[in-house]
Length: 353
Length: 266
Image 1 (cartoon, rainbow over the protein chains, first blue to last red):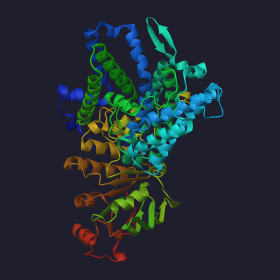
Image 2 (image 1 turned 30 degrees about the horizontal axis):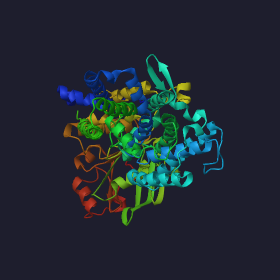
Image 3 (image 1 turned 135 degrees about the vertical axis):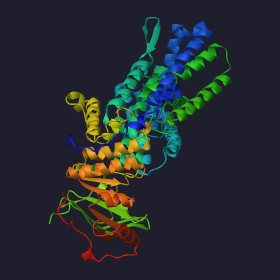
Image 4 (image 1 turned 30 degrees about the vertical axis):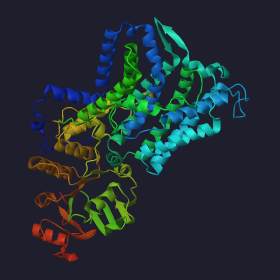
């Protein structure tokens, strides 16, 4: 695209740039550009404080455990981040993941004796694929309801949360499929390998690779730019020629894929497939995303922040637990972190040149 | 006589029970600056949004360069060289200046990085954005990677105008481009409008500011109650006449109107 050289009117707006910024304003602008930076500072601070309080905090065993504990919420947080970037929210995220994992496990399980599906012993690769497809389908249903019928994501996913939970219980009863009932591949992502004194699980590696992929895609593709634009100002995005409905739908679809992969990771991490994994997963992912500096109002943030957010939550839990703090106080402290993070976001969003 | 570059006939647009456009006609001729004025609710923005592709009319036909068109999205209009600066500016606040200029028409890297991985040519887009702004004389937006929301109202307007000017090859529509601007900045935008005309681009300018309209427009389309009340020129009618037509106090017979340009514009 080339513009013919113009006989140019002088449209200089020089003097508008003639202002001084205070250090606080400069910090605000910096954080505005890299919202996850403040989370990184908080994470480092948290690690430093707990390391000083208790030398066990930085033991390889403790660190390895913390990283392993991050995988479920951490992976689901990728899906949640994508959705929150579009100014949406997904409350059904845990239910979709559980649905996906029960599909996987029930297909792959060795015998039909205790299984509702008459298809036990499916090739585990196919079972995993079916589970991911099931989660993707569930994500697509959310996307369809939100895009096609213009329903608010909060209400849609509040509803589908119960619906997917119900379907899971109807199809697979409330039965937990134990680890030994499943082929090894199903539990592979829970296996650990040593790196020096540390132990990483394959699930952690998969999660980390997913973070790298999505960080790259959001930054370097038109789709990524459009996800931000749609969350930022949907009307402006549409007037700029972006097919906002297609972008929105694709986000819920892709989020479904990530939830399906998270289902596989969860089976490995937990060692079994149970419909009662954790009812709080929805809220935990939102917590990680928000603490990671992504704005609930959409258009601002980065996936990498959500990994940092998930790590902060785990570090605080672990640190307080090592310090012998009661569970009730730990829960409350995470709540305070969330509110502080949203407060910081509001301040950063008020940035003015 | 030359053909209109943009032509609309019998355009009707309803919003529920509200009639936005009531059998409106419209003609824009090549190389002219056509101002569109009218009272609030006369259907100015509704009219131009049909040509911008923001919303299709319920009835009526539109032509671009003699060819009948149906724009279902702004994307389709842009592909035909029709660019619009909407009243709301339609910029994404959190994205930077370069990303906004190329929003909805991002360019990919050449080679497999672009075709397989669909990687954007960010560096190239930034470079070309910078060139566009320079060409338009808005070079003082030094930092092309600055988020648009950190810019002042005037600068945002400059980004939006620059986007239209950089890509609009046929027609540029400006909906109240000076509404958010001070006197000095408004003058610059008007200079830009004249500059666009100098480059042979046809311009539709919606404005409430009568002195501005009379300064830059070749012809003035007066919109009233959802249709075209008259087309006059700054030479044939005064500002008071224009206001009178807007309010319905004055009716101009067709032979006293300027439905086609007086002479071929320079």
